[in-house]
Picture 1 (cartoon, helix red, strand yellow):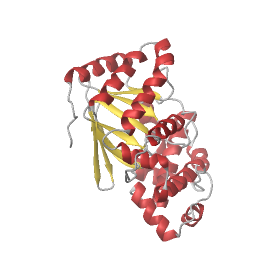
Picture 2: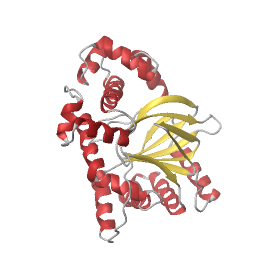
Picture 3: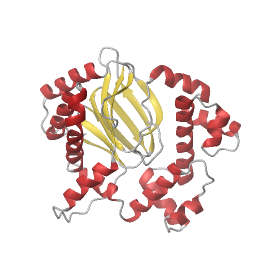
Length: 316
């Protein structure tokens, strides 16, 4: 792993102290800014499947490890996680009651990101970067300072509303110009084959209840089935049908948790015709029956309401 360019323990301690106050409850803590959430976990989490919406995860205390294909992604006080497209992976965390995991999650506002991208493109950079849908990157000091200023204003409703949006935009700028910002800019620009796969992913997330197959998704982006399959796996580290299945199961879990739907109704809404098949595949992915998993989530996390501006429909 690459160390932070300018390691500053004082900044880290300030951020942890503010998060201790701003996130007193285990689970998600909401802020006056709809796209900014604070996470506190007083216990370690063993490997569990997750599907993040596009966004930025900044861990100030504790550690998260993500297993994505053959890659190990570590995001902690020295590294943040950037997500351009929702991809399923497995995550585990290090935390304790004495030193809880404290993190900030910024749900990606594509309008703001596009404005920052446009401003950067006007600077005339001709460099080519390989787009990546998910990566961990060093926490450079300018980004750390921007995050600290955001945390300082989140304690005030007025300051959050007036100053918060500009600070979020500043964080976008720091990430997009950071060590791997070029890869994120290329991904969000949705050009080339990555852009076509992004369109297919959007189709999956917005049409979960419909009958979808690989042939249909390939036609949607004007690719042959073999080419589509290869590019899709390159972007997501999984096959199109495995991605579809994982996304449906994650969304059904969210529907049961947030809306109190039963297994039959939730499975039908995400495209399953057989509740028994849904339950088998659900337990295979999450390790628990749907009802037991909902109980576990209710006891462990205070989930935020759905993000109004998200172009994807996904769980965190």
